[in-house]
Length: 323
Image (cartoon, rainbow, N blue to C red):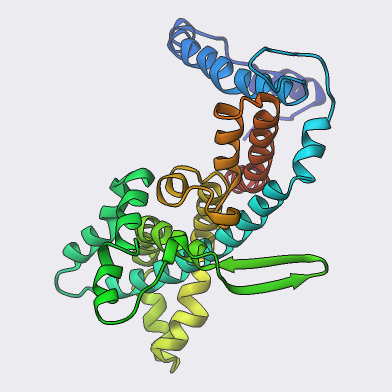
């Protein structure tokens, strides 16, 4: 049998052939021509307007008459020294922590209950998922009526001698001091968190339920054979396996909470002493009611950067995982 010797010359002829780039065919250009309008519109109406907002935030346009003279970081310095914006940042942090924590705990608990294959699972699943079909505006109006001191739940409670202001209550339920900074949890913010959790828990339930159904039964059976109890199986095996889903839920819920506007605006507005005010509400009133366009643009850029702090690392890690 003859042996074939691979020399350096044959390698030189083979390697470039394997690395030869594919030529763009007519089908590629045809597909690109269909995508081109969408790409152009995205660059104009997304990235173009983001750039325009950033440019306006560095200008002196704080009146009805446009003034594009460069102001540097003057608008940002004003915001971080403004009492209302400082309250907005604290309220956003409090709302985000409470909202994400309750959604994750309640979503996992309900998903585990649904995973027990009980009768009427489809009915309960539809009940949990239904609030997601509503907009935040509808949710805000409904919960405003339910928690109003003169209607809804409080009308019944008032008859039995218990009256609560709920979403209008400015009292601080709990507070945390960090140096000179105080993080308070007003009762009104609790009411907003309840409404937001009611709407978005169904999403977490769907995510966790899909993760639970993807875990093989052999994992549970092997743990039972080793003498693990059901509580130990969920605490040490099932819940750790759901960690990627938990990260996804945290990222999505943080994205929603950091740019929340419609729910709070429809339900409470800024609230007395700005107890439920958030940057989204402040931006709307500053830009479209006060005509301070540069300040409103600065608030929008700060909101964009805060969301990007969560989304960008998540996207980078996702791409690394796929590669």
